[in-house]
Image (tube, rainbow over all chains, first blue to last red; front, side, top):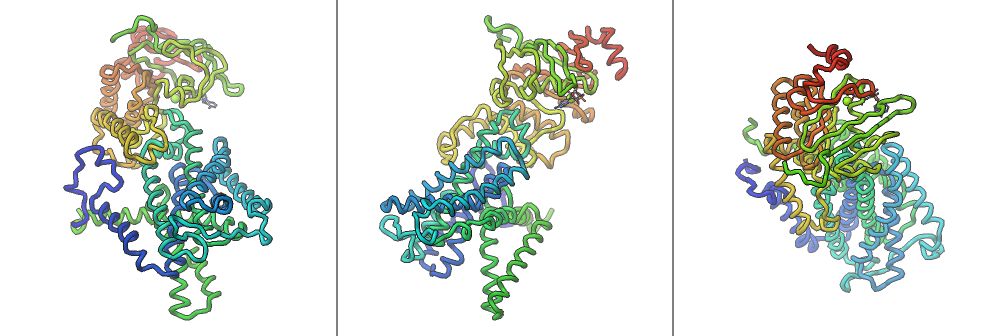
Length: 358
Length: 263
Ligand SMILES: Nc1ncnc2c1ncn2[C@@H]1O[C@H](COP(=O)(O)OP(=O)(O)OP(=O)(O)O)[C@@H](O)[C@H]1O
Ligand SMILES: [Mg+2]
């Protein structure tokens, strides 16, 4: 009975349209974010940064981006890895060409460049749908990775063909490179995630979000009542690619530090992000986060238990993890096709009535 | 009804429309008009071409021949979403709601032609986007009250019973505040009580909002009660056109349609 919405009446439409309509939810999220900003930076160490926090944050942005395109606008894409590569190479070119540039600006510009590329590769969506569109985006995945391998200008003619993130700063604090302190990279990613999650929420609860969902749910009816399919689809591709580009830039410059396109941005990344949003919940912002956390943390957890706890050999565990994750994905798809976000919603509905179920 | 002197009395004129798919002729040389603020019924047996006619009016089908005059202007061939913006809204024979969205969001989507803050303001939310949202929400709430669907405001429409879905779809079309409302069998599959409600809504919309309505309906009782004028189609040809009484007493119509289906 503590978790409730009764007695929490909305007197204005403004209040009814806020992000978390239930007061308790709102407070919980505010506390959580405050904890993440004010407490975690003092506790963080190298292990937590590299294995848990930064990857979860980076993949959350990628999942948010793909969810906008697939979950909200209904346009299936398998090009996520390729678009992350665009963001990564954009940030590499920008940081090497303009060493003085603030990393926030580098990341935003990388997102912008990826948005532009996303619009180009989104053009086929105006003519083809569903499975065929997925195949077209798959082609863009392979084309982009091929491009970054083939054209030496992208990797500044380095002998190895790899790109390595130089040390770059935000307000004098190193964010990239081996000397960047864990709290700094973490706060940098966290800030970007919080801002972009808010923006995603704002976009999806307003006119543009409704036009995306209208296209997703029934594209012909949407067009007949006044939604421009061209604008809705291309804006979804642009926004989605922007997010994925930002994720790619962070993944390369902050998380990996060095990358080679085939390895870092292959088709497996496209599927990884797709699994995240399917497991988390298509068409929900919250689902993007739990999906990203689930897919990043499960392997870490299993590894800690099996290698750390039980002392099994690492290579065996690596394969076992793949099998387990695959099994879990199938389990979730069968038991709750609407993802973890839906399970959470159902739990809340139950909790709202608890302890009097009727 | 305040008629402006310069614009003619007709909101819509359909002139010599012919439409075919491949070799199949669906409409041949159809002409009729719709006066401002009238309820105009389009009737005819299954496959007569009624829905196709509405699809032409809102730009989804492009006829091989003929002209459409809307609001005093000859219309050039346009994308449907642009025609929606000129003030034509519709409902569909097979419900075409956005299943994953709530009733409220479906109605808000109906107002898409009237909203225009850009994507950057929307990303920010506070400011113009929020103001616009609230202003349109108020209008949508009036429609929700009018249709008495307050209790399902937040329900995903996929979960609603059939009759309610039809009502929400009417709401979505009303939300557009269009000059011309096209209703494709709004009462099909409803029970008597639901039909009466729907008739009431249609009459009230026509009266209170001064909306011109084109209505496709199979129930002759409803057609005769609601409409000011009726056009009868039969296998792509126009059989008759006139007041309900004229149409009811027209011998060709009796032979071809009414005599078979009704009374
Ligand atoms: N897109 C299309 N492609 C091919 N044929 C079509 C198409 N749309 C309609 N037709 C054909 O045009 C004819 C008229 O169809 P329409 O849906 O306009 O009839 P209707 O009068 O609305 O009938 P009903 O009362 O059953 O709704 C039918 O024979 C139909 O098969
Ligand atoms: Mg029809």
